[in-house]
Length: 153
Image 1: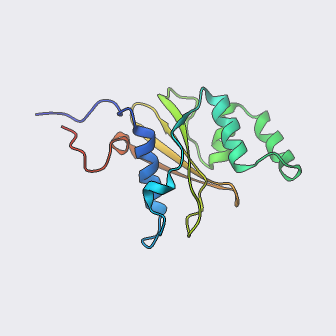
Image 2: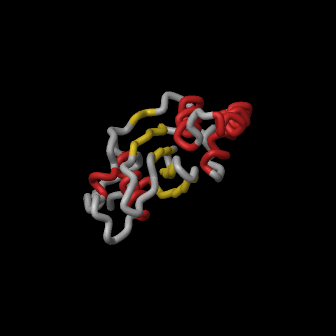
């Protein structure tokens, strides 16, 4: 008897973001899933890079955001990430990686970026709306990293 795969496949960030974006799309979305994911996955080199990119997505540099940006930067990178995501992502634990994919907003879909984070057991995504600014976290098991309808064994 074959067991479940023991690691996520190479394209896991795209598949995880596709799953999260699909859950937010209207049934009448005119753009469609494939056009929503605009960019190739961009790896975040470390937690500091992840925090800065998440901060820039939610609170771009402007005079209105100076106090928020300063407060987040005074925290540790992991705590700043948790604050920006709105829940504990355990970002200071052992991670395989963090990747960012740009999203095309509009037609009832209000997210600008998807961050995909994984360790050896779970995959989390953080969808960012830079206008509101809000974040929505979704956590999946590692099967979310596999393309839909692909035989696993």
